Amino acid sequence: MNVLSSSSPSHSNCGHWYVRHGICLTCKQKPSLVEESRRFDYLFTGLRLSQEAVFFTKRLTTLISLHTHKKLHLVLDLDNTLVHSVRVSNLSEAEKYLIEGEKPGLKLYQSRIIKVRPFVKDFLREANKLFNMYVYTKGDLLYGKEIAKMIDPDKTYFGDRVITRRESRHTKTLDHVLADERGIVIVDDTVEVWPHHMRNLLKITRYFYFKHNGIDKVSSYAERKRDESKSRGALANLLKYLKDIHNGFFSCDVQEELDSKDVRLLINGPFKPHGC
Image (cartoon, rainbow, N blue to C red; front, top):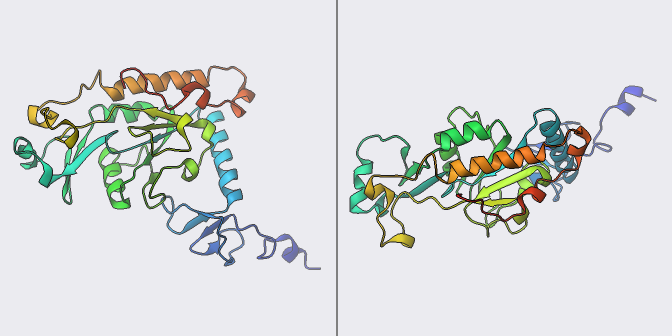
């Protein structure tokens, strides 16, 4: 018997957990397409993980994050949570001054104008000490990456963890996040898009900088040349609450308890923290 061939991975005994561009990364074979595998193109183009690989990777990532880095995972929505964007053609007459020259926190992208919510920079810097962070948007891939680049130009906070409607068109799901649900906090302005993960959800007040249909009778921040408070706004208050959640989760002195603790018991979502 050839000992080398019997002990090496082969097409017949390999589980093909991690496949990229149709080639198993373990045995280098080209397995037949397994329908149960899940795409993770946002991490690496052409990457597919089997159900076993997803389960294993989620658990391993969570254990390393909790025990080694003392971090939970945070999934952040973009539109009306971290930014507000509208079509330039929808700007009111009193807002059109915004397209004249460069202004801090504003960016023109294709046919849209994007405004970053006050306190985002400080929020991300502080939250990064407590959480591994993902962006999850219902926008398309190019839009999601453009905003991620705008708020995290060096990929310090999100890396390539930008999930868009390419992964899930109609609703959002933690199936695409490589961490156990028990260690994930979601922040979103819209509850309904998370039908299966309400218990992980913190609801934040929608950020509107430009004029929009819901408040036509009220002057926008842009029209008044003002903005949401940086020190007393929704993100500043949210950060305080996230720190409380983190402290509550890691309050135990026994490391083994981290293997079973569930952040959802602290959130009891969907929940809207005071001032958020």
